[in-house]
Image 1 (cartoon, rainbow, N blue to C red):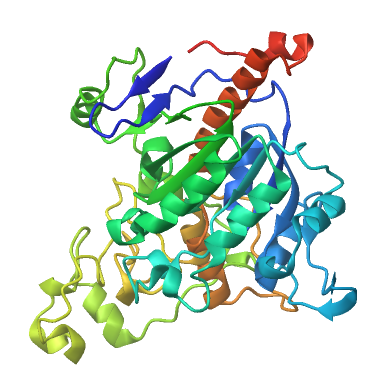
Image 2 (cartoon, helix red, strand yellow; image 1 turned 180 degrees about the vertical axis):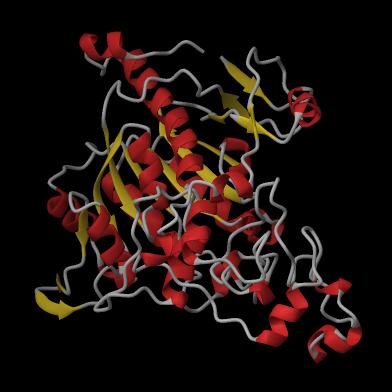
Length: 422
């Protein structure tokens, strides 16, 4: 059954009873990063056939944790009959046919193409140049090119919520026009990771297209802040679901899963903090920030009143999901990133737990035994939380298989395996 939000007109489906093992569907992963999105797809029964990623450290992480995922990093390509050099993983120099050959797939065979072009051009933090960003502003065009070349059954384009702002509407309009011309039904929505069991209040934009589905639906929340929030949410739906979601997962619960020997891992890194900064932290309680500090303990940039960030140098609340984990979440000066109980910043392992990475997922650096703080922050902070990805993947999987049943493309034995109880 589909539920429709009366205000936003976005459709949702319950993903609680969907059979993960009903059928394994192939994935082409673009802008793969450290693998967060692909982990969630894997948990939903998808199989990542090939990854495209230009960050060498991310590629090392992918190859270490999932050697069966093919990582495309050929340094040469042929254009106009001439062998040329290219940056490994640079999507601008990769042809869809070349990628499919490397993955051992044919056009039209792939179930899902996923990817989130670098989000900095559309982020609410920074220059906000959008498509005019000279380095990454046009990468959404590469995603469109790849989808048109691969012709998957469905696709997921992920980005920051800023891309949904009116000033970027031409980008979303362009993508929708191009995809609809290839027979995809298109929907887009903003999902909060905390509503799907991630210990983090992280909102992300998702554009979904599925062939044979006029208006793709998104997953209903599996978690909620409290009963009042749930009642408010379902009051905006056209019908009332018959299940009650779990409670948001807290920072405290996430940290309780970290093994005692985590500090011995090669990807455990934490920022060095001076005694002066530690003394500042001692005065800040959970939920508070630098504004509780006396003026004589504040650096000059926090004295003039121009710096009004509500999260700057703030302490996490243990009993709530964290704020958004960004690439510099190890630095308390960059947000609400002071440890809830200790006077320090977050370690890379704690960042990864708040991003919902599996406990055994190891982050790597090329030609280094020890992870660097900057690389670890980028790999973790740029990722899609796997549990959010899993919920979205389950919703898409159900709709792909239902569309195949309707068109007669799904074999009878596979139809019997589907668990479509909603």
